[in-house]
Length: 153
Image (cartoon, rainbow, N blue to C red; front, side, top):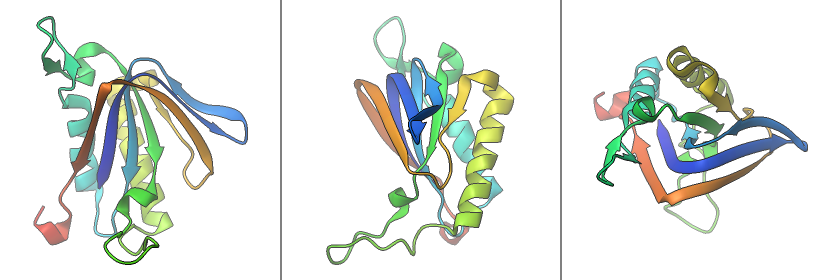
């Protein structure tokens, strides 16, 4: 699984002009599922997202996690992160999971995060054309990737 996480002061996602997810300070995460991903990778990714230390402590160092700060989490399905861009001028999406697997594992991540953070978790809508807005704080942006079974996880 691939996650592009951004520390934000606010984030919002709209579908057809209606807000479907909105957060205050926390993390906005663009999430892609790869074909060999499983619930194991999804669980590991949730632990990393909630525990990744990207928020400043009293000394100004990035030592605090989303759990520590009580911040919000906005998860956005983003299959294009898994694109193969190594050749030509058009991306290939053969390295992205099928829509069925992508939806199932995206929902799994959202459910696991909600089980730990409750109402502080918002999501985009899988398969929808979304408009995402955010205010990146820092800017602070990280690429996280969990190993697939093919990589030995």
